[in-house]
Length: 254
Image (cartoon, rainbow, N blue to C red; front, side):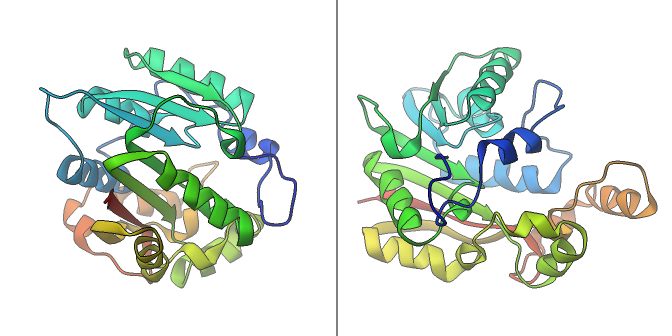
C-alpha cells in the first residue's frame, strides 16, 4: 500500500492493522473455505507446478502472506512480498516462518519500491481496489512493470457490487468507504489486458456466495448458516457478478 497522501488512496495503515489484528498463526489458504478453495483451484490450474524449474514470485500488499506461502509451499516459487505497513511485515514474516518455509518480506511503499530483479509471477489480492484515479493507474503499471517477459500476473478484488453491496451497506457500511467499486467488474480487467497488451489466461467471478464480506464477532444463526454452506463444494461452481465473493484475472505478459 502507500501512505494516504491524497483522495485517490482510500486506506491508512490503521485500517490494515485493525483488519489483521488478533490472528493466530499460521494463516494459510484453507480448503474448508469456499473462497480459499477457489483461489487454490485457480493457482493450481494456471500457475507453475513444474518442480524442475524454480521461479520467482512477488505479492504486492502481502500481509498476512497466505497467498505467498501457497506459492512457496505448493507451486515451487522463490517467494517475496512487499507491504508498506511495518506491523503487517512483521506478521507476514512470522507467518512464513510458522509455515516452515523461507521467503523475503520487504517493508516498502509500492510507489517507491526498489528491487533488483523482475519476477515470473506478480500477485495482488484485495489491493488495487483501495486506489482510484491517478494512483490506480500508477499502481497497475507497477504491477506490469515488475513482470519478466512471459511472466504471470494474478490480480483479484472482492466483489462489493449488487447483492454484496446491500449486505455490506447494512452491516459494514464504513468498509465501503475504503473500496473503489468501479474495479469490481470483468470489464475493468479486460481493459487492463487491452491497455498493457496482456494475454488473458483467466477472467471471471469466483469464490461463491459470501454476502458483503461479513465478519461475525460472535456465534449467531446467520453465522452458522453461512458456515454450513461452506462445506457444499458444488456451490463453488455457482458464480455471478451479482453475488460472488471475488472477481479477478490471470494474465501473461507478452
